[in-house]
Length: 253
Image (cartoon, rainbow, N blue to C red; front, side):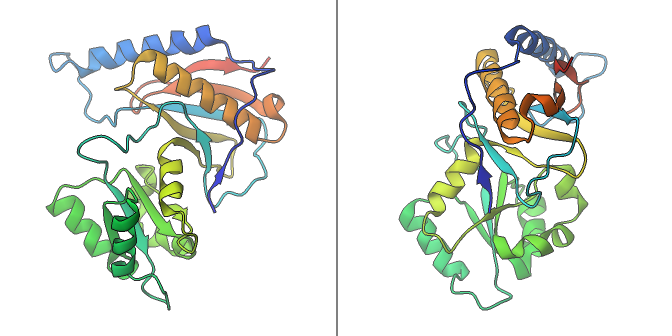
């Protein structure tokens, strides 16, 4: 089950707001220059997000199956925008399951769950190809029944990992589908690897610099509050864009 980090503490912070703002100013200036189509070397790839690179001294011994959700003051996915964001739910139709696609669609409509597409796992590859290639849809988040998680990496392929589109486990046996989906959309997802380095999506470039900075600080505090050893186990925090260099915002001394 995806877990949510407790609200970050307001004391003993080692975050220097000046360092965060200095790094953001440089990144946004670089972004503006590269976004200009007349620049000599315009960006070929951009996803419009700001990333926090976390480097720890020791790998945290916590559940690595699902991400930990770090609440953000400014959501990465705006559920009230028009048109609504594309969110996909993958359901299990290979085993005995009381929740069929038809039942899921009825619940989504009745309870206004912000899911736009439901796909059966047996048709996952063909449906995704149809949606993304033929119809041009790009889902922002994929959700899946928890018991499907072990088989999904092989079905989805390496491209999903590269694009950080790994599905988020959702408990369909609980009635609060809407709450589970909204919590994910309002959080930074901290995927803990087997090493000491992780990359966390924390803000959108379409936000103002103040909002981006507030999200960065909230993510840093939330991650520190989560890991064993707190600040003693943090070596570095960097900020970067998809194609930019990583700029330091914290270094342990």
